[in-house]
Length: 316
Image (tube, rainbow, N blue to C red):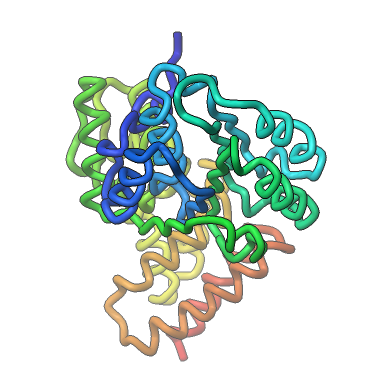
């Protein structure tokens, strides 16, 4: 059976969660008393919000944790009917075991419609004696104030490169993988602290090749190698617009890398260029303008236009 590594390597206990010590200590205190409040987990994607919710369920209910938690992704089921149906039906039933409440975990709850959030507020009030809600959100500001005021708020911090490497080492050791150091650095850059991305990139790479190299990583992640992006930028800045355009066509058309990803990689490379701070600021302003244009225009034409702006900028 094909096992998804994001599930396989999800922490089973609060002690297994990477980095978020300020969160873990508070959660442990609640779990020890077997009495938790409604909670709002806020922070960037892939930093441990879902893992923390399931770890709480594991430690509260033991082997019967699956029977006592309702897990919904609010970005898929975001309407008022879901709150009035699935959520309300689960919230009104009593827990199985010696914990007096059940858990309802709403992932990506910032995607809930305003009407659904109002219905959720009323459900949280009506069944707080036998149900506890855990809401996870990338943007807590999108959760209405009446819900936020009813929750203990936990703000998860972004993960450091060392945290991401710790997670990579955990999977590499568990799956007995062979991986180059350059490949590890590539995963750290591409994942941007999102541990779900780490697991997905590693699993896809391991299927493709027994030995994971930097080339394999960029191949499975559908991203251009940084050295290619840098060469493209340098060609444009040195006045070699057609050479820069050829590299762009190779990346965009033959490899299928999205225009949005190319723009993002260009912005990352600008900070390492050997040019003045003012020049970097001006180039970044141009990148921002063209990133916005991508929403309504053709990817190739817009990025070619950006490279043309780089060429003209250097000449000026």
